[in-house]
Image (cartoon, rainbow, N blue to C red; front, top):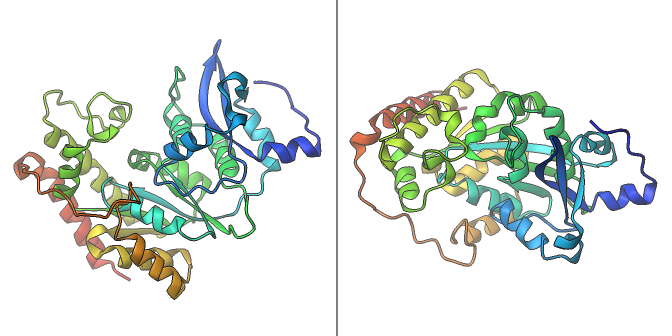
Length: 326
């Protein structure tokens, strides 16, 4: 699709101020919309917020949208200078993954990509585009644009995926076969309380990720449905941990700072005392709302009988972690 697009050096340099951020369809052709980011550092809790901030720039005016053939990403990938990969982070949601990504982003050495919508589109297909088999070469090109070194201090990147991306384990491993894979999880009651209060996409039947879960009970309550999702998450984590020597199980119950130390060891990072102090300070605030103090989780009433299978799957995962600690 599309022919070779030749660029002069000035155009190549200018291109690297942009990232592909949306996949769209036009007369059956997959196109990519581009977003000007300039020298923006990606420090927001979720990449959706980063996009919102960048859209305010004059270069991203609705009157002059920048669009290319999607396959052009593969051609232009050679112009990028991505930093080294640090780790992939899979998670079950509401398990400290956003706080972990915020603590990692507190170092200027790290580029942290937290739930990038474009990666989800490339894997699952949206906006009228159906994807049966994800194009990992296209995903690789996109990642290189997002992790292009925009500041001299940047050394490595971390990708915190959407929770349901664990079902694309094979695709991510194809790109990063030996990269540390952090598997973040938490006991089901706490996750379900949080999802019941403020549900994410994967906690609602019928929304995009639902096709990955293959849950047939259309009459399931929120607790029952989320329990079934968590059961699959825990089971998949256990399967990955048992076969992948680069996978690292991290339980929210270990404590945030212990989690960060564990991730540092897995990724070969030696945090300074100053960095540890920053972690300690930032962990006192809400992961998703950095200006708000963290007040702990709600004790909303739930019925454990409705997610007993998730509890069993969690206990099996936790037993395996505890018996295989290094």
